[in-house]
Image (tube, rainbow, N blue to C red; front, side, top):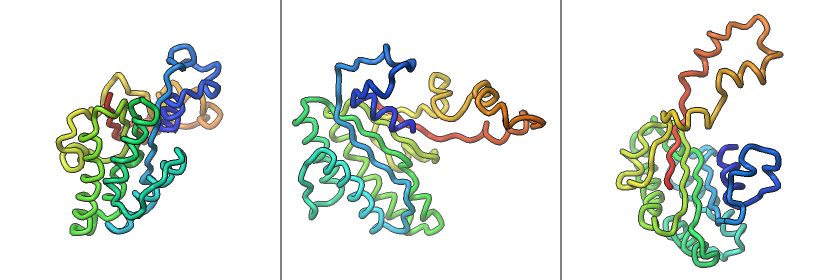
Length: 209
């Protein structure tokens, strides 16, 4: 939902935000091309990861009615898509990646396969550094803390905002929201115990402006 919200903001879909807080605080005259990539599905090896990458890129190529060069590798296709969108729309591109680390987590118990998957992901994400001038904004979400060390090394424009107070309530619920929206379910419930359940969960979010 977070990434979809940001996608629609940059695509300037004002009608979706009518009456909401952001309606009068966003420049709806500016519209940007958005690339959305989701690694939520299970991936068991490097070959399936590459297939998944191409599937996600294909969705974006189809959405923008661009012919995709099927025989090219995923790194080339990602890079080409960014450059084509930048040239076509004369705008920098927004890149949104959901569950960036899940392919590694899916094979984490197989050290050799996990390393192959890590290398593949690192090459894919390296596109973002090489094309920095073509990119307006990047948001990457996941649950692992090894972000910059193993996958984004050299990608200095990314900032980990997971523990930033400024973005503290961007995901999930605050205590006040929990008590307000779920009031009917909280009778005879120990709120302190519930707080212990969710307070330690941390979804890592990386952004680049």
